[in-house]
Image (tube, rainbow, N blue to C red; front, side, top):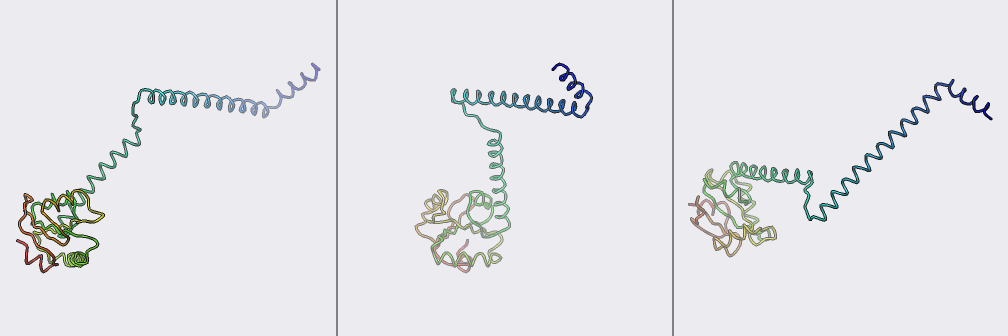
Length: 195
């Protein structure tokens, strides 16, 4: 039996490919065991941190959440700037606080609009089709009135200027004081009533 074992070892030692295969196999197994051990240690450390966080009641903000918050703030600033730029280049725009504020140097007319109102729809179409007829120093701002799309700011504007129904127009000055108010009409009425 010893003689057979000696022959096997001798054959094994003479075959270099077999030796290389055994060494590589041992290396792969060793590397796999090391990697598994490290991953297990990292996972244990993360679990302990998560448990500690839960027990202490801490809130952990993940880096992704922080980046998303920064991206949202950047997008809001970009949207406000785009709205401001649009206000400067367009004479008929949809309401936003930024649009209203950025148009303060122009004569501003608030058009209280409702999506369900046929009179409002025809006025809206008239203003969109004939923006060049609106004087350059005038900005007509379409404010949603009594719509599902109306936000609280728009509702507050309607209350501030005592608007009780759609297709009401309110011209305001740079200090947001009422200059004049009228009901109904399209481009001709706008040009006739604006001060």
